[in-house]
Length: 199
Image (tube, rainbow, N blue to C red; front, side):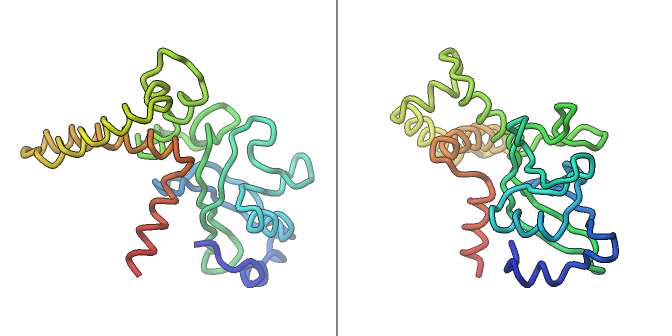
């Protein structure tokens, strides 16, 4: 989804905005907007090279890596210019809140509970080190996690009613997300694999 760096840099019209291009930052999994930032040619080149949320800070007047102080970093998954080539969408995997007010999004309105929301909760519980956390217990016990994955997959296979299928899918998705956390992969990695298979 990330275009070849040199061609994208040449494609974007930085001159129209005096060197700044509005950059809408969206969640890679849900597509929902998380924040608005600005890119320069230099910041876009750095973002593409490092596959990270790197922007131009108008207040600091320098390059700014999202999460450099808060730890709420972004992994850049895709970049799409608009039809006039003077604005960008960044698709990111966000670690933690996007907004400086500690909200998931800088825009008003409650964000839907998505797979990305679940993954972030699992990540936070993994980082907490709380021995009373069930997520922490699963992460530290490979055989228990494997047992739960097999159990929930079997229960989903046998589910009949809509309600049963929803319930069992929710169970399996939780344990899958814990397994992904353990393996150090994100939702975008899974989607990339599915996209590769669809070719």
